[in-house]
Image (cartoon, rainbow, N blue to C red; front, side, top):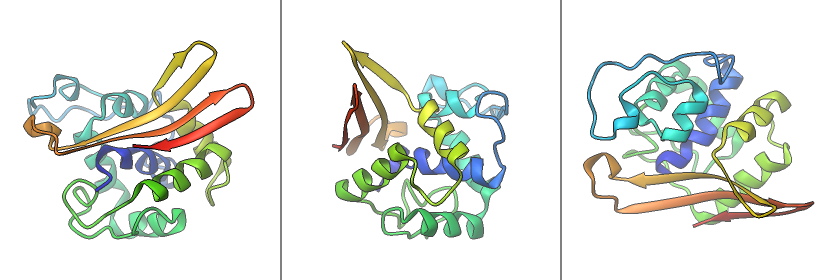
Length: 174
């Protein structure tokens, strides 16, 4: 399961479908349900939601995208096994979606290079909202994903992204 690493394509699909027009201005209101991860208990923009791995926000985004459009874009992006079965707001968490590290690297490298079959604007915005860590003169753009995090017992953790140092890049999935 991709877990919250699916927030990368979910963000791109949200931008492509118009569910999100501006990752810094469109606000998703907190539903008032108090969750164990404190960062989820507030309003979010797309930028703050991806930084907090705010699963409830991404579930709402997926519902707004809808099953038909989600499947169309998952196919277009050639993401993982392309299987969105198991519920529009669950398929990447507990459903039928699967992705392996090679597929993660392939998808992220296409995003990094801006060659996915979607708008350049969407790809640029998603690259820009990814969390960043700077180490010396290197930049690491990344996304985490934990299965079971909301229950306090992760059974699988992902760290995916790429490093940039000068003109060199390395894409990774762990």
